[in-house]
Image 1 (cartoon, rainbow, N blue to C red):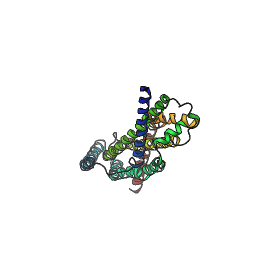
Image 2 (tube, helix red, strand yellow):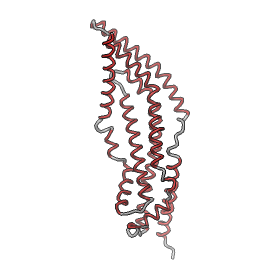
Image 3 (tube, rainbow, N blue to C red):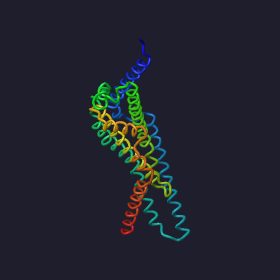
Length: 283
């Protein structure tokens, strides 16, 4: 007798198995391979460098003129203001090439090698192994019904697919951070609109999130490819949820309190003031 429900369940089980195999191959062989920035963004970066250089000069001239006018109006000395403008101009000019270099160094020399190390076992993983482990051990009796098996596989497949999409988004975010680093560097010269701390905070947030998400995914794959107990099954479900919504610690670490922005901003102010004190002593 033809069992329509059995055919549907078998179909979905096969779809999930093929999906797992494709994702495992993608994660192991593709996602940590870094290529050059697309030509459009490379050209855009060059345009931003050219335009940004003119903007940098314009800001310096504006600050020098306004400081001279204010000092002449109030009869004050412009030594401290000139020292501050000089220091910030040097910092902004140095950060234009340094910020994208630091970003590429962190990603290429730390994040990607760390991700490849954590995902070393994925290349040998297969969906058939996941299926066998789900059916064996303490979980075999609980997941004996095909409906339950399809539900669990579907939930895990959604989590892994969301993770893969997130990794693609993170790669795009890193390219934008590289392109926009020029304006973040130039904003160091601005008195009330310094966005360099925002750029650094975003870099730290992206890198931390990528590493944490990779660790969760690697842990999930490790659990799926070994004997599954009730404890590991709970972790599989928990890690799957974290892959979908993201760990709460990474959401609140950089954006809830703004502590990183304060620390970076205070560090920059301290370095500027220290340099100004040194210039006054030598004058």
